[in-house]
Image (cartoon, rainbow, N blue to C red; front, side, top):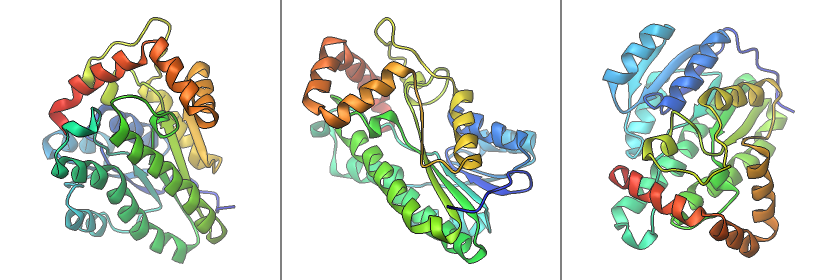
Length: 267
């Protein structure tokens, strides 16, 4: 079991803070008294948020692993790492160039692993700290036009749960927070895709609450999703072919295609 982290007075690095979901997480942590270092690609978006929250802003390109190292060095000692930044990487794999595949895997998986290693080395020395990966229900449920995104999020989940076993005895917690479709902010909202009737969304604030819960309770996994999506995740794990059939019947393929179209510009 990892050492309990008192959020008030802790120092956290939140990546992807230029996006709406990262901003919601940052604001929630600030309310808990966390001192923040915010990272993203655009300083013009980061700096107003940093000023609002009394945080430090550091621009970084996570597809460049040398820049990842610079970010971690500039961030300095941290008690909490929230690895939130990710690329959508939806769409048919055959439409991707090798360079686009490498970029998606680097930003979504390699960079969080590299950041975690750097942060965890210092956390283990101190015997305390917590690392939160922002995954996705797409790390539990595979779907059409999502193989690359599924790969990175399934990988992130395996990494987090495995590393948790390694670091827990040394006082460092590791959690993965997995939202379903998020309203108002994040990849789904940005894509403008429409869900079939009856499929519910979760709010950015609910995801931010999930991050705080993961840290406070030292939870391995926090799924932020309606009950029907949780059931689908359980079904997908045990009966993937049947789950795929259910998705097709319920209109999942159209949602995936719409997401891919809406996110094509971000590959």
